[in-house]
Image: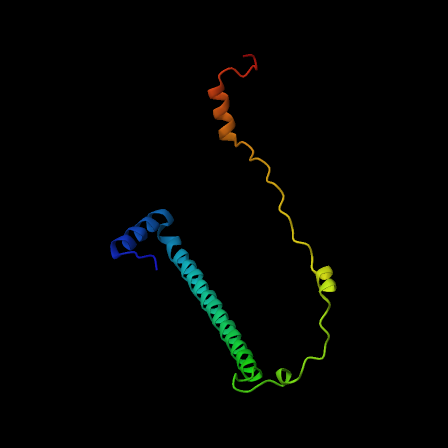
Length: 133
């Protein structure tokens, strides 16, 4: 987990013994152990919840895909709507043109504003900022 070797753990324990003292060190280690155990428990529960939800979603998607596969006819079989002749009248070209929206026109772009860096360079290169030539 932390990739600590034996020597590093020994140094940490010696420093903890010096800082906390022999009286408080066992209680401190017990508290640390409980906190690590609780963290592992919460982590395991979280992973279990995620795996359960993913499995539930996969099952729902599989059922939906299976239902859709059953609804879609095979390409060899003609569908019932393709065999029926079209009975609706086609609209006249004038009505069709009136119903079609006009194409959008793009507006000309405004020139790009100078950046702060560009303005600063202009002032330095321009020399006198007072406006007199």
